[in-house]
Amino acid sequence: MILSLTQFAAPGADSSLPSPDSLSNHIFDVRAYGASPNGETVNTAFIQNAIDACTASGGGVVLVAGGSFVTGTIYLKDNVTLHIAEGTALMGSTDISDYATDTHKNIYANESHMDRCLIFARNAQHVSIEGKGIIDGRGQMEHFPTDGSQRPMLIRFLECSHLRMRDVNLINPAAWTSAWLYCEDIAVDGVRIDSRVNWNGDGLDFDGCRDVRVRGCSFNTSDDSICLQASRADRPCRDVVVSDCIFVSKWAGMRIGMSSLGDFENVVVSNCIFRDISDAGLKIQMCEGGVMKNMVFSNLVMQRVPRPVFMTFNRFRLGVDTPAETPPMKMMGGMQFNNIYADNSELAGIPCGFVISGVPGHYIEDLVFHNITLRVPGGGTTEDAAIQELPSFVDMRPEFSVLGEKVPFSAFYARQVRRLKLSEINIETVRADARPAIVCEDVDGLDIRNIGFVGLVAEAEKMRLVNVINSTVHGN
Image (cartoon, rainbow, N blue to C red):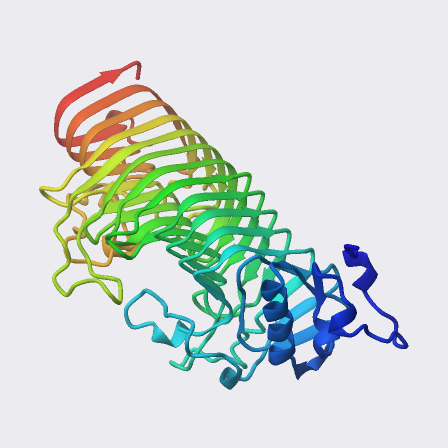
């Protein structure tokens, strides 16, 4: 007989727990293996015993229910579903010695302090984390200070396949919430991530993964909410769909690239809301020698997101395994941005706008921006408008701060781009602004159609085109 999860939901104080031998072959209650839900006992061995028994039997559900269970590093294995019941918390130990040292590593250089993690799986198949309960890393700075000490991630999967994560609440990691390394067939659905108590609070980081679906998730993160990465040249990041999500972040909503030795291909992001983001909504960056192409971003609402899109193509070493001589730049392009509403009218004093930048000799290619409404704060001065050249990203970590605090545009900036199309774009500047709304420099093949401008001071220079060839402007 297969027992239901509710039969082990929350035993009373007098309940006698069944022995492991009396449990179903399909449900493995960690309490039956000795785990205590008192919020103090470190239950690592008990929980691991339940996982081991589950996978040895051919698979099933490892049930965590009925209180608060403290643990150090646990290892998920083949055919195991870790179910955190509603009203239950799986809590990370606050003692770093309870975290194992054989859980692979963080892929960025100079960040080995994030090598450890709470939940780990290596070469596992058909693994799930589900339930309406909480996985709480207890990663507050008083437990894991940011002084170079070890700060464990919450979850790391390495070389795994057929992974599912549903409904669970992931909160308070000391570093990244999750890293998915070189995995395939991933579905994340209805997950809530709150990672604000420490630095580097990324949400979902998919590195060299393929066949990835993220749907209906919400993020409140201290770093990038979703990252797509490719830290190995032989492991591309491809076939990724993100939909129906809400992003709030102290850094980027969604970052694609940075760690980019491998290729990126076939990415769709749709029907999402981005709000109260400090850096960029979509941060798309190629800098370690891979190819990035075939991406569509549509039906997006952004509020108080200073750079709705920040895209860079340059050369810069980032990964711990990146060669000292970063591979040559290859290709970045083939992207469409459709049906985007971005309202930054409240962000006075903050440089806002879509920013697209290659470097001299290396163009970003084939970009389409269609049906975009952008409300910008304005306030630019004649001195800002007179800026003739912004710093280049050559040999620089590609962050917006490289460009400085003053920029000569109010809404859209593009340089080193080949075949750029802007159509059906409405730009409203809510305060007086002496800068042109659109600045394009070193662009080959510019097609502009039906751009509407409201509220500009510089009526004679709505657009500034510098070293632009093969251009077409219609309906403005």
